[in-house]
Length: 200
Image (cartoon, rainbow, N blue to C red; front, side, top):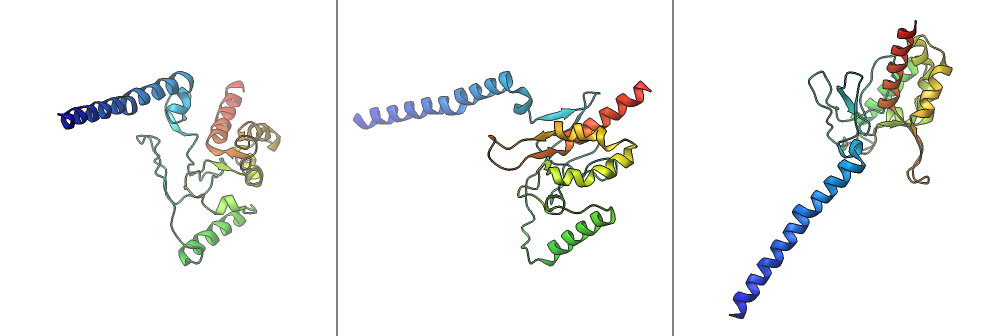
């Protein structure tokens, strides 16, 4: 009899723990996230003026136009396109520093920046560990400032406030280095240009 009683008790405890950990706790976290942090809880997805998603401010994207600041290179390709939803797959190349394929990619990237009269910084030629870092250093942004200003036909002084605005500080004010969020900066440049055209 005691075995049956203990078995029923164990099943009951298991069900209660399952109810707490699999239903109640996730629901509480969901409600707290949606009420107090809706932007972050939904992936930090940015939308344009037409309310269409253009990407997540947490995930780096590839920008190739001279009119945009270029982000860090990535071994994975962020889903882009008119029909693609902003999703990213995290991953590294797993290439050793001595791998010729990695060396060729880095040299090719560095030469491309030199052709554009840009002194390549580490974050412009090396990928991040996750392959999804959305930030570049202030130095990397400064190296590209002249090119972007020239391509957009504006003065560098008009872009500098946006660089400062979209620079994220150190995590908890002590960890890491300040970084410029490339997606937010490039979208702000487009908005600035749109406003300028409307005011002309």
